[in-house]
Length: 358
Ligand code: NDP
Figure 1 (tube, rainbow, N blue to C red):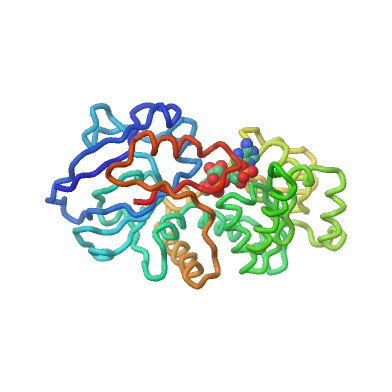
Figure 2: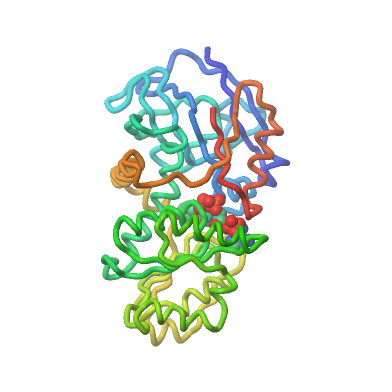
């Protein structure tokens, strides 16, 4: 028998209140065409926390599957595992796999999964954190940059994004640089000028053309600044990526050129997106939402292709990891340590994304 531990919750609430560490054992006789997996790395994404709080757009179903006294959910949508035993057409012992779909429940030391619930990734040249964080943020940035401007962005085209220092934002900056798109990036000011400048510099280092604070972005003069950058507005901004909502999103909408698309994918400020009527009527701006699960769960082959393309860039040193804070998870790690790591996720101004490292 393999001894395993999973984080679980059996009712919605704050992670520090409702998350429990559950110990169970896994029988050595695996169901046919299943794999026994050992976790290597699993990030703590904002959506995971919203799911635990019960505020996310889809609710998970509670089940008694791993022997918890009450029906439970194992949170975590993303991560990388090593195959310990079992084999399938695509993966065998020692291979690395990631979940094929969302809702896998990655916050656990081990998992038994049907072979078709995972995708193999070529492990050479990658760290577990790189393989374990590719499927959500970089894939989202990739799809939004590629699929939402109509006609598609071409080299030299402009896009604008807020939350530019998020995992998604950093991925968008880097992909845009590789593809020749130009970016205007908005971040929140830090607690000192020097820290703000350091953050701007960091994003420019990733390939950002311009980085401004929310205050600069929302100031009156900013319009003129954008005109200057875009040849008097002749090169209209064709795409906006909205991570934040509220005033920031409204300002972004007003800066877009005619026929542009504003894609909302996050709501970090928890403020609604209010849109000036004229932009809809006279500028024909399209306001749409992006949800990675809709794309990835609908087409695993497309997901595998995008994941592999990005991992290729990582291997070639063309794509840098987002800053992470390792949360080591060993056999003796206390429940409270794991819970607290999850609880802090939505606080803002963080050093990096929390990642469970096993
Ligand atoms: P990260 O944890 O990497 O970054 C969080 C970002 O949110 C930082 O830029 C942070 O800025 C900003 N932020 C935090 N609090 C606030 C606030 N109150 N107001 C404005 N900005 C704030 O996040 P991810 O890249 O993983 O995710 C970012 C967003 O994108 C989340 O809302 C997530 O749910 C969403 N997302 C959606 C997907 C989809 O399919 N729709 C897919 C992937 C992500 P600061 O450093 O200044 O605190």
